[in-house]
Length: 192
Ligand SMILES: C[S@@+](CC[C@H](N)C(=O)[O-])C[C@H]1O[C@@H](n2cnc3c(N)ncnc32)[C@H](O)[C@@H]1O
Image (cartoon, rainbow, N blue to C red; front, side):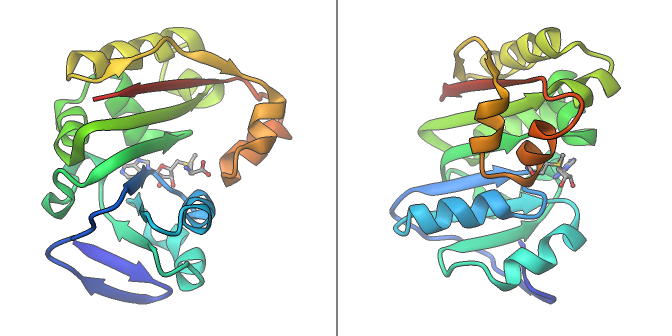
């Protein structure tokens, strides 16, 4: 799979890590990955995004236990199979959000494929992105909960995130929402 550090691109064909592996899908500028990697120095933290331009800056300064993968969430690299002890998807939009809400088997089966047994999954969903995809925040959240349950995740009902929660969440998009016009967002979690 394709790894990026600054403007340097390399390829690795396997991933060995005995401790926790945290996979952040649709990582954007990777701020969340840097935060988790700094706070969990024994974990390997992987940020994955389809857009390489997002990742140049943060990957250049990333801690040693963070890596950034260029890939589409609909075709998660096989090198990630059965690796993730924790998956996060924060404020997805575009094909990542549509895949979750419209029950795209390639995406949902891929999430199961990369997860280890008992892996935890957390999603943060925002109202504006779901509205663009044709769903209300609560309907879209329930649909994503349903779709993840159908592939084997044991999901809890969504809960609303407050502006305070968003401000405390270490992702760039959370901050934008917290200080923007439409801060409505929900949090979903579950485990395999
Ligand atoms: C609104 S941004 C959120 C970024 C980051 N998680 C945050 O909270 O700041 C959504 C991200 O999802 C990524 N994305 C959308 N569709 C994707 C796909 N099919 N595969 C991988 N990444 C995708 C976009 O490139 C973008 O970086």
